[in-house]
Image 1 (spheres, one colour):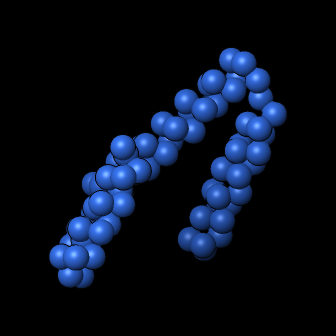
Image 2: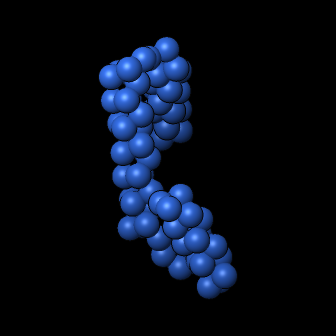
Length: 71
């Protein structure tokens, strides 16, 4: 069931991204800001959930990947 919900969520995101390709001026600026904020909030949530489960090297790699996205 969780996989289905994840699939539906991804399909909605894909539709928004596709629709945004046809937007101009204020609508394009708005959707760009909106999608950026959604992306940033997702990365922040990933940072909050980040824990060391494997080796320190794996944890540092995950941290660095998230950090790179934020910069």
